[in-house]
Amino acid sequence: MGIGKPVAAGLTDAQGLVCVKDFEFDPIRLIKDCGLAVYEFDHLVSGQPLLSERHERHPSPIIDLRDGYERYTEWLREHSGKTYKSTLAKSRKLQREAGTFRHDYATTDLEPLRTLLGWKTDQYRRTGRTDRFAHQWIVELVERLLTTRSESFAGVLDMVYADDQPVAGHFGLRTRRTLAGWFPAYDTRFAKYSPGLIQHLAMTERAAESGIQVIDMGRGQKEYKDKLKNDEFEVAEGRVARLGPAAGVHWMMRVPVRKTRATVLAHPLLLKTADKALKTLGRLRTVVQG
Image (cartoon, rainbow, N blue to C red; front, side):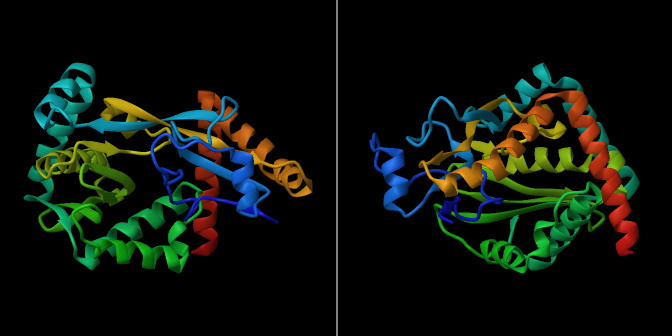
């Protein structure tokens, strides 16, 4: 019906046109020439020429490392001191109780990646979310990206271990200067140690050493993002549409749902209630499937 979406919609945290600087055009004419009635997006990078005042803006938290890792940790001590100190303390406790700490940054081994994806699938099911890795093409994409290596682009798998047991990990993508957060997860048996925060701090230090200046954690409210971020980018959600029946049908199917979701996400009580309902659904689904 002429509905256009970003490449790999649902997986992409930064969307936009690839064009020369200061490129000017008519968005409606563009989608018409592409044979589209509607182009919709949910992570369009701020500053894109497709944007207008009516599109919704959302923060995308980042870890800014342009002044180095030491300056970042100084910022954490000042603005998120309790989190920083407790994470270091839990890391020491993990080592005392579970064994020697080991950190593998940018490993290319397939086995730990599959462990990480297994944790992520469990997390999706436990929280009532859709399991992305139920789609084989997504699994194959991530595995292919793991082996992709160039100066300007690569998949980055980061894992932390205690006594050679995998505890937590993250798979993302990097350019020369940016590491894009994608799939963080951990073994729930170690949950009391806040393994996700331990892993992210370890990853941040190694990323800075490798030349990464920004870790983009992506749009979405998560407690760990609030604790670790020291700045944020902006992305937009909405659509560009031509007048016509296809655009009208799309509006009825998508826009009210999107606005309802935005209302829930912006209201702490509604968000907490929705999250609780999803987790209950996840538990029921696990019981049924089990």
